[in-house]
Length: 147
Image 1 (tube, rainbow, N blue to C red):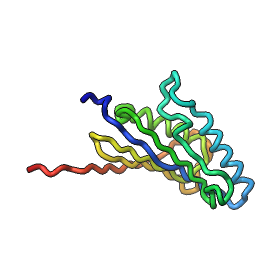
Image 2: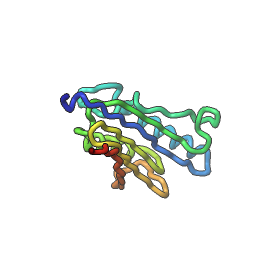
Image 3: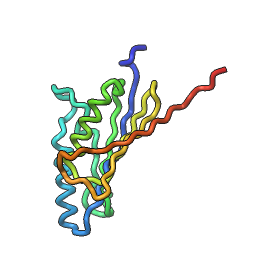
Image 4: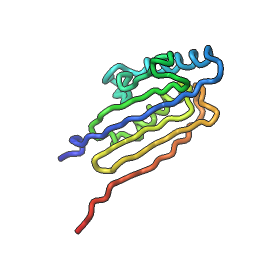
């Protein structure tokens, strides 16, 4: 089995908690929607690891999934993405820099190196900018019993 036969699963959420004014919240949600729409559709020539089809956003209305917090969720299955993980993270952080959010969580499940959880947070909220982002990572791996 080559490393290209290994499947990796990536999934997570980007959370935006709006301010108190509904008009401001709607404007920020539109910016987030536009950032997702700016991603390539499917596979592109520049070998983007993110594509708009892997993201989903609820509507603005309370009955369509946005009570107060906008939750953008995403998921994708890759062929051994851990070998390109630095590039994936760089592309994801570029997306985050173009959005409004307070936290983001990415789960990476791999066959060889276990499960990883990456998280970003901005206590006061992140507005679109090139500001440096801080990420933390937790690693979980099931160890087999050796007899």
